[in-house]
Length: 184
Ligand SMILES: Nc1nc2c(ncn2[C@@H]2O[C@H](COP(=O)(O)OP(=O)(O)OP(=O)(O)O)[C@@H](O)[C@H]2O)c(=O)[nH]1
Image (cartoon, rainbow, N blue to C red; front, side, top):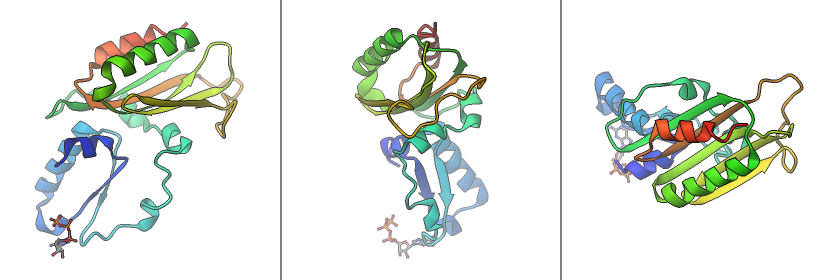
């Protein structure tokens, strides 16, 4: 198994399942999820998968970023069998844009090599625009409903920031507290 490929993937096809027991399959799924919690696993025999699940999924589209799985974000499990893990942060509030920029810049500079994927949906103080970011290692793209086809925060909608980081040696406690320090 290539850990980086698993960490990077949005979807993984688990093929040749006729050759393993249910327990063996579950063990492999557990290992994959320990590395990349939000990944979607497609089970297959003779590589037969529903093509609709693979084609046109727009893995890098904003829809995908916005579809941050809530069960993943709420999962507080720490279990993992390698140094590659995923960290989800979900937290109501509004970010101070300057603090957030400084935090992201520092994170990418210091941890970029270890950060395979990052993505998130953010609320900014003083703005009704929903901000969306996604990154690969040091590269980060940020957009918002001001520029793109992203729905702004609806009137009265709870502004819940959601972030996902997948990478090596991530410190969940530090990531969470340093993000929360960006809130106004
Ligand atoms: N039993 C079983 N054999 C399969 C399945 N899928 C593919 N194979 C067989 O596995 C062999 C390798 O298939 P390839 O399509 O060449 O796959 P590959 O990725 O190039 O090779 P490997 O990953 O090394 O197996 C072929 O003989 C396939 O018929 C499956 O679901 N079950």
